[in-house]
Image 1 (cartoon, rainbow over the protein chains, first blue to last red):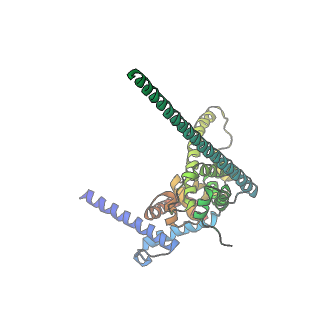
Image 2: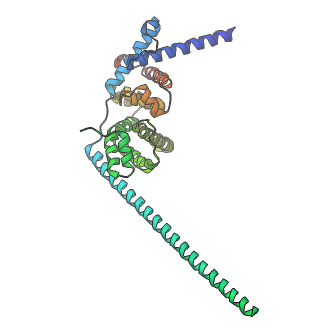
Image 3: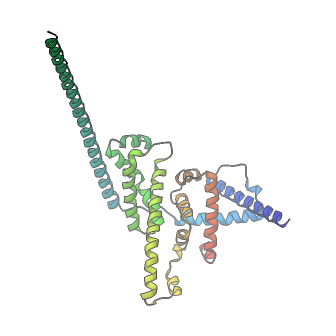
Length: 135
Length: 185
């Protein structure tokens, strides 16, 4: 029984937390997930107001910070130069790969032609020898 | 003139370095601001902002535009670099603190130090004491003005999970500032 009561309390506490998390999102972002503030009891309403106050404080204190223009400009230049350098390296590698493939292709083609000629010559010689032997 | 969309710039930037520069110009302020709040000082923020964009450049060719905002990718890189920085420096700090205990003479006590803390910074200090995921959420929401859905994309969580995390973060902040809350409120 005690464990059951504890479990029920835990589920209720979780449900309260979820309700307030939902209500916070609705108050800060608008929208409606089927929950209205009338669904909150007095305690939940007070909790929501307290958290909204914290959110207001954060909004007021946490304004965007801006980097110095010098930093932005110099990093921007460095990045573009680096990107250019890498693009050139990529292009160079691509060109080398294409040339290598072309050279390899040419070598294979020449080798096959030479191989064909060798086989043909050998075949002709063998045939001549056989004919001479037969005669 | 109509501004180019992120998708167009991303597609162009694969071949044109200047387009990467345009993406950088579009997001550098926001990434810097995020890192600055996580680090608490300008020098480290500049260093990590530079590293964020260099890492983005390193991995840019493997980046795939799957509909999620490009900024979400940049924020994730920045978040990982900040987390690595804190992890590396916490190790060094532990060693340094041990040295201090052994060698440094005691100067001002904690009470004197507390008096010098600017009241206005209490809230920011409390934010910096939050767990990293809560800090990230608070900064994205209150500095960058992102919605829960957008934050969910950056943090790779559902919108519902972000709502709950935000609630827990505010409760944690309020508990942390319990003594100063009346002054702040």
